[in-house]
Length: 538
Image (cartoon, rainbow, N blue to C red):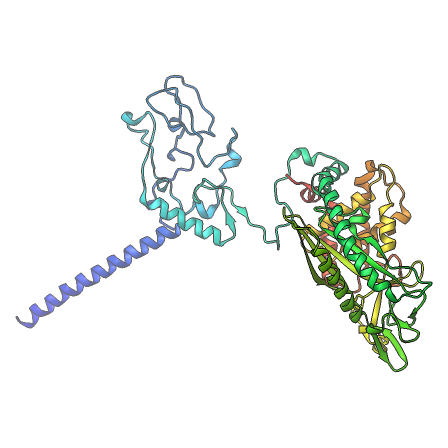
């Protein structure tokens, strides 16, 4: 073979290789264009969104009964058979309504990537032999295509109605990003929107917040039987060394269950074990801030000698040691009660901050948490509990350096609050109902949890000093007034303590958090639809 023939053979071989490479690249290019929905317009097949081919005159291709000459609503597609009386079937992509124009909106990114022939159907209206209807045609690419579209949209945060493929779905729903989806995202019906605010509040309160009478009665019975027996044992130990003129230890029922502001389930109780310290315990003034005191004993030995902390000639009662001692007494009382014939009830003791919590659990699943709080009463209105020192302001007072924070007792107003709120409402009045609704909304709404139940009670008590029109018929007006007062406190960043006005309860909350809470409250005040979304519960 000479050099010319060898060159010719090499040229032919290179041409074949290049042709193969071009063909492969072209196929890959077309596949990519098809997957991304960017095919050239002249290469696309006619697309069909509504069950018929696109043509200059689509009227002849619509589904018309040949014999009866009756135009049927466009919201339906019909699967015709030999029997002309066949029942129409609904197209899975349409809702049940006759006006279909608002329903023909399709996501552009889905529609642009889905030519009509990918729907897997064959419409042969031009063939007289197949004029009676259309038939289903299996398309192996449809399942893969639907899977790709579904994965793409789910990755963007959408979900689709069940029973409808990703390509057919026209109503993507954005998945809420709130921390617990606490606020119901259901569509509010028109009948609820048309109600007055008072009617909405009453419906929400009666349906969602009101305690079940039988459950409440059973829960109080368990607390009375078990906690009563435990506390009797604790009181015997505490009263062993009391001064002769001091009153015996007693219990006070406090908290939302006894204020009448509890909602949901009757599963939380608060009970204070009150020690009379008026005879042998004194409080020291000039502590770091209002609401705290150091409790001193005059001489030793003392009935609480085991809990006294010595600092020179000062003998202060250590709240931590008192809690440890109180916990041991409660555990001892539980051990006594546990040996009683209560096979169907179990008791468990644990720490819960400054309280000792006793969990009562019945065999049928009812579980109740009871917080027992040790309290020292110095006079008719002054109570102290062993809660650790916590400055309300971001900047700690310089006077705190003069005291050991571990020996400070916090002043408590729980007894006074419970007595006030339990009798705050007269006949057909709604103060506590408004408070229950507010507590529920602020607990469910993301971003409002920093405004606690104690803040809400303070706002209500202050408003009750100025407003006396609390009839149930005015519940909507008073609810809005409470929201406006809360918004005003957040705007001014000032909410004075009800019993210690020099304390600002908002000092310990970041300014950005306050602004976010204020914005949300303002939307609830200004928008009736926002209030309806919060109060509606299907």
